[in-house]
Length: 323
Ligand SMILES: Nc1ncnc2c1ncn2[C@@H]1O[C@H](COP(=O)(O)OP(=O)(O)OP(=O)(O)O)[C@@H](O)[C@H]1O
Ligand SMILES: [Mg+2]
Figure 1: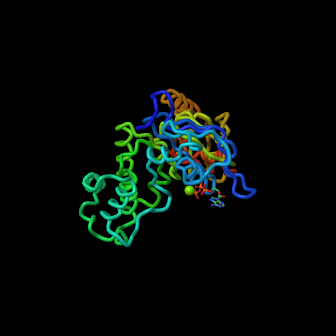
Figure 2: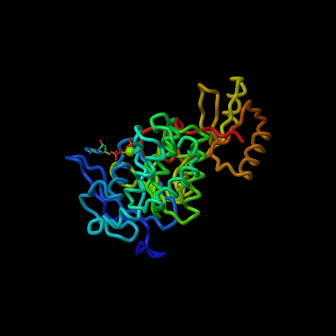
Figure 3: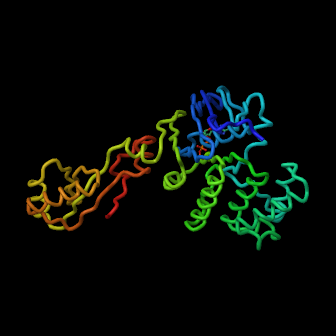
């Protein structure tokens, strides 16, 4: 169906540019998404994630750039690109006035599926997304999570091999979000390529093979979740005291610590490994320090996000993980 070979990426952009008026939204973006992988585009509100999705899915034209999706050139062959992809937009494409099933059949018509095949595909997808019971009800009566599932089911009509998901789990409860992740993993296991935008760093961490952080029109960093986490410092052990005297003597006894006099807390840089923790504990014993609370902090994607996209300080944005 497509001319993609195993070594040409499913989605490739080189020098992608887009401005609205005098506002440059995408300022020369390069990206390559290998077939059968999940690529996640992260960025704060207004960073240009939806713009990138709209351009790559042929809904909006780029100002410049060499763009190929499914092996087809977006500039010369948008029809072929459209035939190869599915898109779940940030805002629902579900028509509330008709039933879930009718929404699905409408998509089947748009894809020119023969009638029988369209019905079969609609029924299968409704089943897979746990919407069979609600299929004959108007979509306006669906909960937010059901509408989002219907949205994704509609995207999969016609069995696209490349799908764009623009914030697919925004507004979903934790269980629905985990279900959606399961569905996305299942698609990838079938060899589907997924281009995902999200506000949930945990989601990118869970799903994405590669993550790119969009900031000021450029890709501020790109890599696996682990690679991105390694980009920023911030691992430490934090000791908290309730007794001001104990805090004071610990602060004097220990070197290379950062003091937080107000919280009566000390921070010791650490990578969080067992070996380092053991040596810190030995060191505390030797110095006769007894802290009331010890927490280990390891940088997470939130830290990366804040470090790359905003002025917030690392310690404000970091999360404490007790181990
Ligand atoms: N049709 C348009 N006309 C003018 N400006 C636009 C248009 N579409 C988007 N923009 C602007 O482009 C910038 C990027 O918008 P975009 O929707 O791509 O951001 P986003 O990263 O998806 O944000 P969010 O996280 O809020 O969904 C914003 O400043 C937005 O105001
Ligand atoms: Mg958006």
